[in-house]
Amino acid sequence: MMKMEKTKKFVLLALTMVLVFSLAACGAQSGGDEDVVTYKAVTEPSFPPFDTTDEDGNIIGFDMDLMNAIAEDQGFKVTYEALAFDALIPALQAGNADIITAGMNAEDPARQAKVDFSKTYYDSALVVVVKKDNTTVNGFNDLTADMKVASQIGTTGADKTNELKANGQIKEAVILDAFTTCMLQLRNGDVQAVIIDKPVAESYVAKQPDFVKIVGEPEGAESYGFAVQKGNKELLDKINAGLQNMIDNGTYDALIEKWF
Ligand code: ARG
Image 1 (spheres, helix red, strand yellow):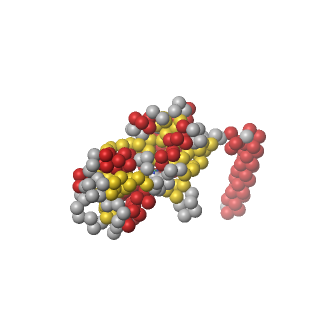
Image 2 (cartoon, helix red, strand yellow; image 1 turned 90 degrees about the vertical axis):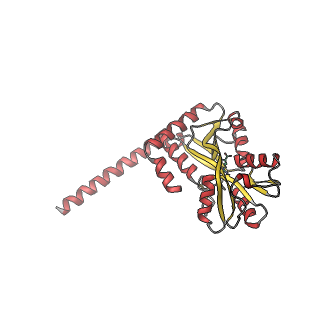
Image 3 (tube, rainbow, N blue to C red; image 1 turned 120 degrees about the vertical axis):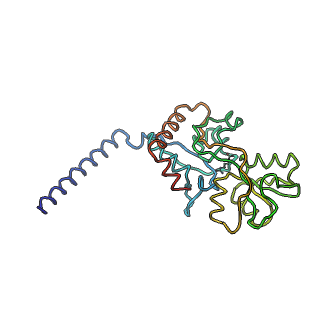
């Protein structure tokens, strides 16, 4: 009995190996992996859990996992490169990249004029983050003319901060390259508040509960989408189809579970 089982297993193993090798040979002949088109995606990775880096500097996050799942589903590959947030759309326009995976608000007409967006995959809004011991600022309306407020360059948060400055509500809009630098300035007391996307603020507060807090009600609802070059319908259709499949087959929910 035992011996039969072993023989069976061995035969199965041998058959599997023959199959794998012949498939590999087939692949090599027809070009195989080389036929799979690879797209270049760009992001700004100081925006966890959407866009961040691991200890080795690899770009990771919810956006990358979701795009990789879409790519696998639709039979393409993606590589990722980091840029400043305000350089992402120009990179697409210049033809230096194919996809933006950056927690980017897709509902901005100025952006829609420059790139095409996929169906949206995450609803968000802006919040105010202050130091834990701040007792005067309890929301957007409590920001005052003596305060400096930081945001990341090119973002909806920066739009809001610039608007507060233009209205004379705050003293200075401090527009910085990375979200992490905004938080550093808050820690140092160089700014009194940071305006940033709610899910990113929540993830930061969860890691640094003794240092910062979110105050007041969120403002400016937005929804994130992936961007492609204007008119790249072929790629956009693949991304939209893959995104829908990932929602339908539970991968999207599993990734939300993983990252949030
Ligand atoms: N959602 C905001 C926007 O679209 C901020 C995105 C920042 N993303 C990033 N990867 N740094 O402007």
